[in-house]
Image 1 (spheres, rainbow, N blue to C red):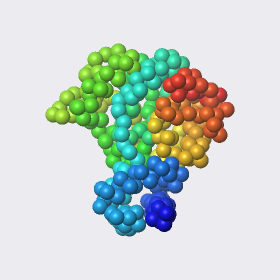
Image 2: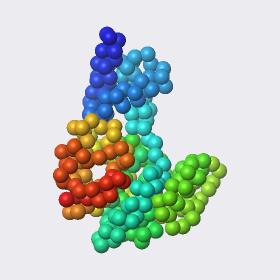
Image 3: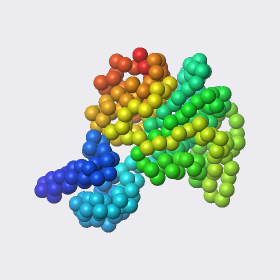
Image 4: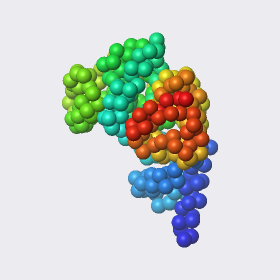
Length: 273
């Protein structure tokens, strides 16, 4: 249909315009995912067409920052998929303990829930003090929230249940202070965390790491961009380093499938060959 064809053209032009103006590269994100997010943004921006949305974001950087919230979906939870964190605790941590110092990269850290989950796990296993965590994302608002370590108190009950199922060794309330409708997490959990802007679509490797966690990010990429990300992870990991992915993500059929072996396949935990 002509209308649908026009919308496809407009969408491609919008994504190209964002890349040229703001250097955010969504060109190899899943087409269906981007289309769905942009259509949702149209309603919020009260724009009848994608072209109208493009005009606004090209001439108003604050409008682009607002659109970025739709394009990146900053949604997460602490100790998400508890069996995943339990597997890290049981299968990966004993091997991490053999390193004199540890560097961990959490790629696509969103608003920081996974960062604090990892920090709590490492503290309980006696590793946090000798670990540097790089927490990266392309969304500056999400990074700022992650730095603050303040989360809605209404979510804490679910986070507590996740923590307990993930093998938590203490009372979850030991790690935060409740104030009004928020839980403020212990600032010492982020003392060894570096929050930084980094795009898996355009940026390069920045450090050698022992473990990389990139969960529920690659499902929004097409195969070309997934392979680019896997290449970055491969080049960043030390010999026999660990890569952990989301429950719906896999190295199978990627260009790097032979460069990793499954350590806990069900939990998408891999080790560099």
